[in-house]
Length: 244
Ligand code: NAP
Image 1 (cartoon, rainbow, N blue to C red):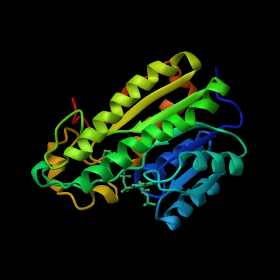
Image 2 (cartoon, helix red, strand yellow):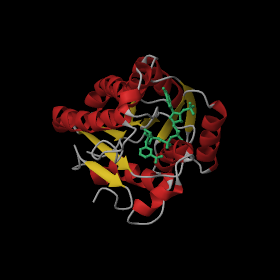
Image 3 (tube, rainbow, N blue to C red):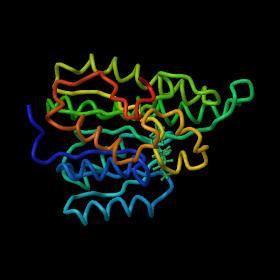
Image 4 (cartoon, rainbow, N blue to C red):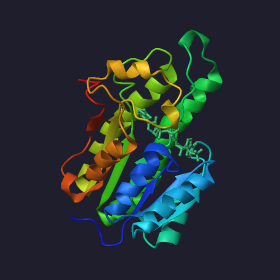
């Protein structure tokens, strides 16, 4: 089954970085895009303007996925873009690094809440319209951290490994309904999240360079496309070879 003519994608955390690039890549592929943000309204507006400048359709939607009600985000996306959300990209993510021995409960809870629990709730909220349409795409932005270790990120690694487990299991639950559920696992990508990290990290990347948000977005664009209709439950690593 191919994508309906009027189809809406919702990208969480699309005010900057990887999420902004994903929103633009999906818009270039014909999706109307709901650009979710938490605090950076100007960034979300810039994403919307870039999409509109390219002839696409988008709206900025405020909402803290770690606290808010996903139902409200889906409702607003449908109301403002005129069709139900048939592609959900769970991209919003945070870090709160520290060695496990020193990590307090707040740092653990914040990262798990945003990077894993919110993705579960958003996925649950997305399912009914997708089942009704017999078409859907859920793409979770995981990380190379989780499948592999990274000292100082026990919370982040647990959340991202959990996200991959969530991806696999939900993919089985909905595969026969025309819905695919996949993950992308970026390596070291140049965004605000990584701007304070040592450039030494690059030496450990086989490609010997950081990735760009657009390179992750291209993978998401493929997984959201009709070409990827038979790809589900998988994790596509976009990491310059780090995980190989
Ligand atoms: P970023 O530049 O720091 O952007 C993070 C985005 O997430 C922002 O748009 C932020 O919104 C949003 N966000 C955070 N908490 C939110 C919440 N509770 N509700 C709604 N939005 C929220 O990060 P990035 O590097 O683009 O990362 C995007 C995703 O890729 C994350 O899941 C991250 O874990 C993953 N990733 C990144 C890398 C990397 O090297 N950069 C590697 C692997 C995986 P506001 O700015 O509006 O607050």
